[in-house]
Image (tube, rainbow, N blue to C red; front, side, top):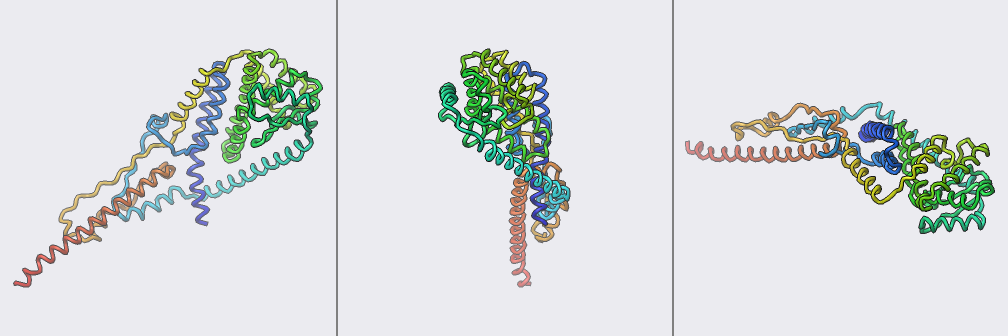
Length: 415
């Protein structure tokens, strides 16, 4: 059907350039993160990787004169025909440039993949809600007192509910709108009050930092852009760096007492290993997401870098610079109207002959022209303005022709 083809064309005008631009951005950030890994702060690395998800919300046709793409890509000049018949030749050109059967097939495959991703996420949440949370119980008084102390330490406006579960593999926070902290029941027997306090501080830090919203956004965009496999790498990197940043928040709340928190982290990870919980399950992302993540967290705690106001300003400045100079990756276009040929003795030329002379048989539309909606609108506006000028010129010519005929008529009658 025609409307399916039109929807598929419009979808590919967004998806095609977006997949390419996001791949370039991920590769660039990956190189920077690998080369300067020991020199960049974990907060800055998290912001850089997180900006990939922000890029997915920016139109791929966005172009500015100060972006890096404007220095590398030339400006595309588009000539608009001057005649009214150009509109009839431009529309088929656009249809030929943007219409293709493979786009419909790819659009249907993408839609099926998105539907499968949504079903998988919904199924996971239902299993968590009716299995994981349904088997949980309210934490005992000992844990509740420690949770209140941790909430006051982090200055939370509302303390999330704390539950105890026998099936949880590790401490976790579930829920976006109503976050809930779940602690394994067997972990309460092996950890001291100080260790449990540190664990609750870490989980509450996720709530305070808004990591649940950030993870939900990344998960949603990963479903919508599942055609880009590099987004899985971005999700893994951001998940590991979120844990590192939460550790920094906990250490700051403990007044830079990183040694005690390191011991808590090691004891918790040791309990997961000895308890044979190496299989990834719901809730063990923070304390057993893999050997590399655990080593990364311990390494960052060993450095003990403070997170102050100056670093916040630097991170914000870097984020703004990336948004301004890197995000606009579209090609700039310059729309110009085609020059009208000079006419002699326009008063003796009929309107049909004038349109025939000024008509342009075809328009050469660049391939990347169809990817910019603003340019298409500007082209159609230019064409409408030119058409109005042509109609006004034809009316003036017709008036002059009739006027000249009326002036010659009395002379003929006198003869």
